[in-house]
Image (cartoon, rainbow, N blue to C red; front, side, top):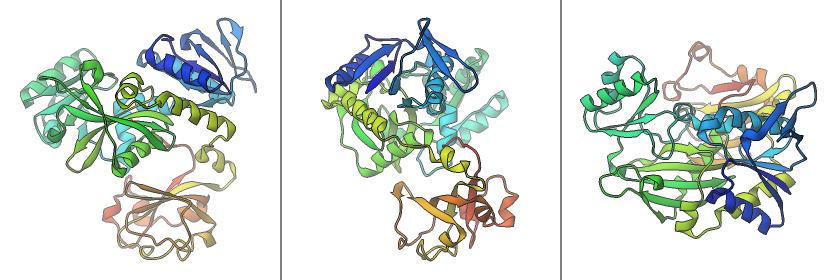
Length: 406
């Protein structure tokens, strides 16, 4: 495999370890400065130049895109995708994760735990918003901050109001989040590669510092996650469109609470405290994908006219509850169930004798007209119907085009 690592820091720990792991596995690898590319576009022939020369052929790309160059970096990654080069993380996934508001908006419609969050612009909306998330203390975050920069704890409503007003006066967009008291000063970083967590650590803040980031002086310790935390980390990365990610979670009273999903997670802290070859796991995954690549079903399966991918919800009281997939007669309507989501569990290619339960979600491929016909008239007029408010009906979300979760 010939691998390109997109990085402006060839001597950083993460880039050096990834290159070392690739060479140990007899792959050819080059570290390429993301800003040295030129993107050429013409009909039927997208191309890239690197340092004024036509770029040679690569089998795969591992993007390490810094926050300061997100726009140009994702443009380069997108060009590699258009040239049919496998990218460990797509431009779409990187953009989704880089913006904290966008990522939480996407995750909020799934069964993924997140801290109660609000985003406001008007000064008069600040206090009501703080009260909606549970009142002070609250955590205030810059939408595009990294490594704990731009994360503040406001102990009172007055302090929160002053901080938000100051940041907004500097043209900064900020989020206000519920303070998860039981997790004060510590969080979990799960390193996701493909469909599994390859390493995890708990980061603990020191002294009076409430931010647990290693860059803020936090101390890391290896931790073995239970299935709920592993499944939450993997699903969060997949929903945002990332194959390689660092998923940061709080240990809330009701289970994992997603804080952030990082598309260019650092390796030094997690490899040091766990002693695991995380870089090697990343390279092995990329190599396997080059040999047998996954496809984006939402893009590939919707090319057949009249067919597409949709999600079918099974609310409490639905006629589907208690029946098997076979007895649901979906197949007779030219609808095939690809994956069943049950809470945090993901069941791929479910058996036809699997019994459906309330709040199951089915990812299906089939005739869009059949799926549209299953939408009750009373819910078609609603912009965002709530599953728990419906009975004896099944909600279908047609996906004719791409969505944020594709």
